[in-house]
Image 1 (cartoon, rainbow, N blue to C red):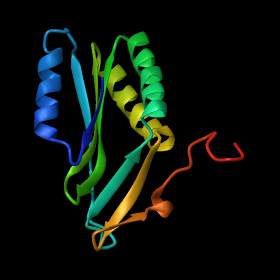
Image 2 (tube, rainbow, N blue to C red):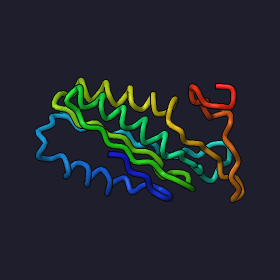
Image 3 (cartoon, rainbow, N blue to C red):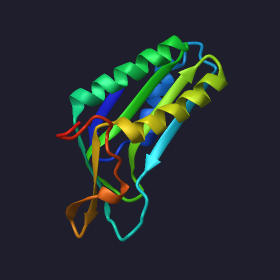
Image 4 (cartoon, helix red, strand yellow):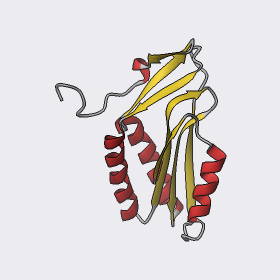
Length: 145
């Protein structure tokens, strides 16, 4: 399940709902990861643009990987502005065994940072400034790819 929201994520609400959705699925592990906007370099927050068609395809590939391992994967991400100390990203793995969930959440979060088509901007003095120094080029992207 992939969910996109405008603005900051409701962390307690999402985690509670996801837990309740899977409570009867007989999973032994529920491992969430919550990404929070840090206060650094004087930013007021971050702003996000998402290219949804590629993100959906990428996430479907991860869903298939999870299913092969008997797990379920969920993710929520923000579009637009998210202020400092708010959450822009939540991922969770549900699995019968903890080892699968622990390994999969690490693999998923790292691949998300490297591959998800989400562009990040700093919010400085109310303006969006592309955060190039903290961005990762997506493999195969660009005019000469």
